Length: 372
Ligand code: SF4
Ligand code: SF4
Image (cartoon, rainbow, N blue to C red; front, side, top):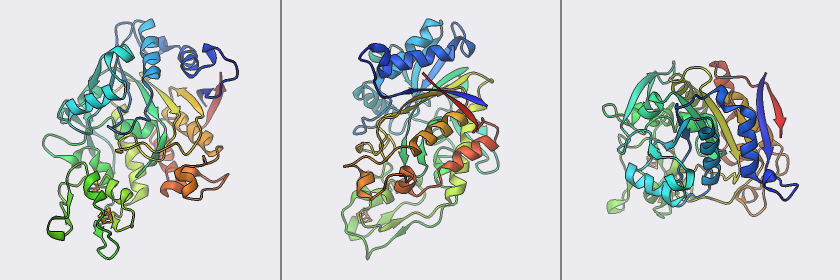
């Protein structure tokens, strides 16, 4: 049985030790970082930098606490993510969202190069075959995975597995393009992209949100560039009329996430990666969307473990105990107390990620929750 340490977001006494940063410090001490990381060793602190309008990320103060804790044992941390937009622009996004060398106390670098094609193909399994792992993550000997737990268009629930599966690989590969990168997961089991002209209100939100300019309405016609589209699903998510449908295979998608996570983790020796899940500002969508919605679930706290499966299962179990927040998308969707909020928002069988990760030998769904 794996151990998962937990600190609640609630404050019972008005002192630093009871604050979230203070509790994170205690959680990191409890983990005894010297069991995993060595003096002088480079350690990647993998997070998600967010987007221009998505400010609800793992807050810089938490990243700083992780960096400081690593430095106390003599390790050399840096904070990193893979690109979703051009690298220089993405570093500006990180800076705007408060993540820079000065704030977190360590270099902030892109893991797969400024053009997002600095990666190495790594074997995965039966579903994906191989995938383009960011070269920095491939090379670095140790990692702390800092994940902002929230909903997700395709994954339904996004935590540590999604953070390293989608975020540990590149968007595309220098030679084989998006089909070797995270697009390989999105395109799993894809059917034909459907646009229903009768339902379309010509609001052009799909055109605006597409990161790859795959959609336009020139000459009042719907033009879609199939070869360029990496099936991220953003256009279907924002369409207010349900006029866009991108059929897929949810089960295969969830399993492919776990496969990609295993590929990323296969580049590390045993006991060189730990996981911190932040159950804070739990919004319905991914941090890469152009805006951050208000949270659908109240802040719960922080979980830390050296078992990715256990930390994910514990996070989900805690989420399932919570009620939907008023004045949020959960209320709009009429989700009631006791219902699975993230499932009802996205209708995705997200638990399959965790079950598959266990089947692939990444960890254990049985855990002991130790609350500080
Ligand atoms: S799924 Fe939609 S938003 Fe995503 S790349 Fe394809 S067309 Fe663009
Ligand atoms: S978002 Fe939907 S309704 Fe709006 S233009 Fe695109 S397909 Fe039409």
